[in-house]
Structures are given as structure tokens and as C-alpha cells.
Picture (cartoon, protein in one colour):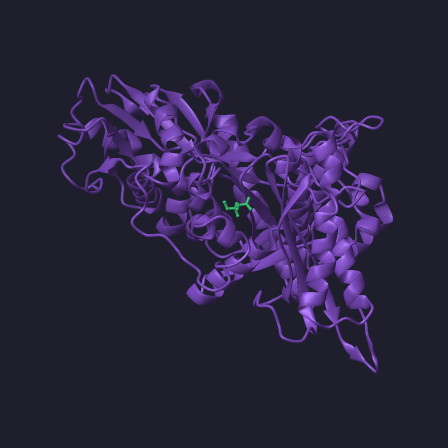
Length: 570
Ligand code: PAF
């Protein structure tokens, strides 16, 4: 365990102390520069000087050198010479604003970049904090720090000017913050030159003159400096994208998601997103991602500011160890799909991270009674306890968010909704329509285990649902009639071994005595030893003498999504 002493109980020192404690380090009580620092380097692996820049050299000089102890400062501007006379010197500058020890503690562990120099200990600390390492030697320190201040401070100061100018016209800042956020996203994606828009980029001098005429004279210097920077950018660089742009038919290159392996880092990253005012979307998966998962991520990306996909093959959900071992794992493929669909983070923990001591089971598990008990719950005892347990853990780590689940696993969705409601979890559960192949087969990672004959036979599930829907559309209201129509279709193919076919209340999953309102038709069968499930919904409303079916358009296989990259279903 790394032992650390920090001098400087300001925002940076306290943020780092908290983050290092969270990362499992032994952090000694903080010292101030007014304490006797002579023995501060004794008995620790790392001494951090987190004082203001002007006091780093005097603090370093006050400490008696210890050969094995690394002395490190947090300044972006200073070189290593200020740490004289210590033999092992390092610098670690977090590229992140630390407005308070509380925000800083979280932000330092949310995948930020650290500029490092000197002893390799600096990179070790950055990695402990799950950050990215950028080596910046003394010769480039000045330019590095100037760029960092422009990115962090000048942008904020500019927004202060935006606030004043908008307020003078009675306008609120919020809309302009959204505009700035979108412009920064473009900068990240395209580079500054290609992201630049507006009158200076277009050479529209009349509009610039109009702005100057209405601005408070005190704002003109700042405005003119901005215009000059924009003109210079427009002149200096050809307006091209920094990232490679899609050529004919090729998908565009997309940003790699940040891959997180530790539960605490995942939690910290999402805390950091919320601290920046971003709404978090969560897509829990077991990997082997296909177009159905992509639809969940895309919807989350459309509705939230940042999307995290979790990939964890939950061993508790498998009653057969061979089944668990055979479960398809393809992290590189999953990352590419998650990135293309808009994920910012992928949390891919090992089993020990989620279940310390596995195969010993956790002392606490979650059972959602009632809705878990029938159908899949009856066929796979303990399955929904395993789902509810892991989902509860993921929700606890993720914090306040919107979580997206496919309606394909309709009973699972009902279990998760009940879990969230009963435990008052700060999660909004969003159910998304099943994605189907053009012939109606619901996408599932299990389909890849079917041969060509099994693939054909599997369509019996869709036919059974259609038979049930047709029965309801023609006015049948008794559950046993609808069940019989579905069962008949499932039994029509000898390759299909039906398990259940039922029509239930969409909310409670109970079979109503008389059919009406929002209903769900559920089917399950085994084909070539592979358990397949499917479902579809209908809302029955009395309208005079007739009952009117209402189908969800994306659940309607006539309008099924054609897979974007050929048949990539796994
Ligand atoms: O639907 C799944 O992939 C899993 O059951 C879930 C919800 C990720 C829990 O492991």
C-alpha cells in the first residue's frame, strides 16, 4: 500500500488526500507549510507538496531529504528544480479544475489526464487514480501550463463576459452554456478549425461592426480579442476535420469510450459527470452486444448527456457452469459497438470486483417476489434473484440515472421496475422496444447458437405471438382461448419444444380473468437445446362494440430494423 504525506491543506491537497484514500492508499494527516517539515519525508513512500507555487521551493528546502522518498509537487507551471535538494523528484498536475475538496476528490478519479514529469512514481499515482498520463518535461512546462489555463480559466472568463452581455439584454445564461457545450463537443470531434462558425470565420465584417455598436465599451477589449483569435484560426488552418471522416459507405470514426474496471472508479466517473451537470444514461448488459443493445445505447445517448454501458457476465445468472463458460465474450467488438452507438464509458469489471470472494456467494441478495416467480422465474429458479442482485449493485454504483432495458426480456424489465419502486432507487427505468430481424425473429445473443434449421424453427415464437394478437383483434377475451391459439402455433413445428404461452396484464404479469387494457403476450420454447423467449404487447380499449388493437411500431416486425452491418447478431 502506497504511504503518502501531503503538505498543503488547500483545495488541491485535500482533493488529492480524499482521492488517494479512495484509491486505497495510506494517507497521513495533512501538514501545513507552517508546521515543522524537517521530518516530513520520513516513513512514507511519497511526500506531496500541495502548497501555492510560490511556496513549493521553500517547503521543499525545509524537508530533510530521505533517499527512498519521492517528493512531488502538483504545480503545472513549475519544473523539478524547485524540489532541490531531494534526490527523487516528480511533478503531477491534474488537468481538471478542483473547485472544492469534495468535487476534487471525485474528479481526480474520473479518468482525467495528469501531466507528469520526473520520477516514475508520478505515473504510478496517476494510474492509481485511473487517470491518463501525459509526460511533460521541464522544457515544455511553460507552454503546457499556459494552454491548460486558457482551456480551463479563459473559457470560464469568456463565459463571464457572455453572462454580462446577455444579462444586459435581459437574457439568461443557460441557453448560452448549452451553446458553448455543443461548440466544445465539436472541437473535441472535429478540431478547432473545423468547429469554428460565426461572423469572424465567414469574414462578415458588417455583423461584427453591429455587435461592436451595441456592446458596453468596457466589453469591447474582450470582444475584439475573441474576434481576432477567430480570424486567426480561420486564416491559419484549412477547415478540415481532425478525425478521419467517413469515406464512401464506411462508418465514421468515433471516440473510444473510457473503459473502467473498478467499481469505485466507475462510481466516481459518473459522480463526476453529474457534478458537471450531465444527465447520466445507463445500459446494463452482459456483453456480446448486437443491434438490440445498440438501439438501447442510441436511445440513451439521445436522451442523456453521457452514457455508460456496463458489461458483466453475471455468473449468478447461470445455473449451468458449461453455459457460463460458453457465453460469448468479445470486449473489443463490444467496445466498437458501444462507441459507435454513443457510449462515453464502458464499465467492464472482473467477477472479483462485483462479488469479492466469488464463488462464495454474497451475504446479501435481492429477491423481488411475485413478478419474479412465474414464467422464466419458474423455469430458471434463482435467475431473477441473480438479475435483481446485480442490477441493484450496478444502480448503487451508478447513482442517479436513467437506465435502459430491452422489452425483449419483458419479465426482467418488470422485475427491475419493481426493484426500483420498492427500494426507492434514484433510477428512471426506460423500457425500449424489441429489435427484430426482417422476418420477425427477436434479436438475442442466443440466436447465434442456432443452426439454419433451428433459425427457421425459431420463427414459431413470432407466429405464436401473431396468432394471439389476431385472436385478441378479432374480439376473443378469454385468456385460455388466446393461450390455445399461441400454443397451437408453438406445437406446429416438431423442432420446437414449447414451455409456456400466456397473455398477462402488462404491469402485474398476472393473468386477468377478463382481457382488457394493456396486455402482454409471452412465449418461451426450446429449439436445438437453446431456450428462446419473446413477447409482444397490445392495448385493448372498448370502443363501442369493438376492441382496438394498438401495436408499437418498432415492435411490429413488418417494420423491423434491418441490421446495419449485415447479420452481425450474436
Ligand atoms: O439483460 C441482461 O443482459 C442482464 O440480465 C442484465 C440486466 C445486464 C443483468 O445481468
